[in-house]
Length: 289
Image 1 (tube, rainbow, N blue to C red):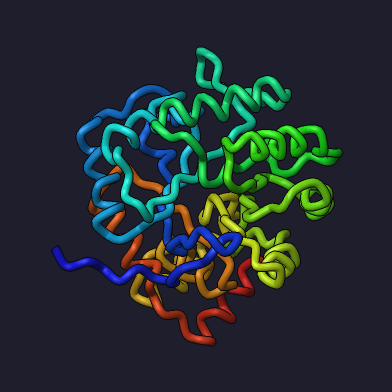
Image 2: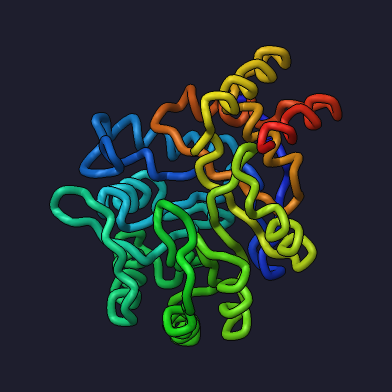
């Protein structure tokens, strides 16, 4: 097959891990609500193998997707892993029998979650682990020092190469950095929700990656209408415009859009490569209003 040129190029974490800026988020490989097995396991495996064929070397996952399902499918589809593939996982939650997301941030639980990710992915060490400390509503104020200290201990034990943090504010990032180097931050951020603008720029100056989730999340009806109009004018889709805008926004932004469809994966890659004019960028920047 002819490999599609990946939009955005690459970004290097901590001088030893180079990631394609267009990555893949494995969340949707699990069943509805990110709970239980997928409707079509063979299709999920085909998506992961297409990720590799396209040249993507950054897969974002977690053992609590399913739970366990996504990591097991990744191992089935891709192990033994290509030398340049980097699996980035996250810890900080577990699932109950109804599929609810339950924070699990004790030192003992965080350690167990790291071991669970290692076991199900078939790895001896994890390239990057994101510590998620906030909830779906966003960062929650307060110290995260004890949790970051656990991460630092796991790194010292040789189980984690690099540490990231997720759903945090600037003060929590600074606190974490006073304990251990942080290579990436994963927060909600998109055209409409730009509370992290200063954080994105600060991280770029430090050479730290910013990984936004929910590229179309939390839009008001008026914001959605504005994005739809701009996308139509560009002859594209709202998601493609949103992904392209993120790549234009800052060179340290890494994308992890997810899908359970090979065709949709290819569309995402092609869409993110959309070139946006200065006028279009100005219109998009006004959406946050």
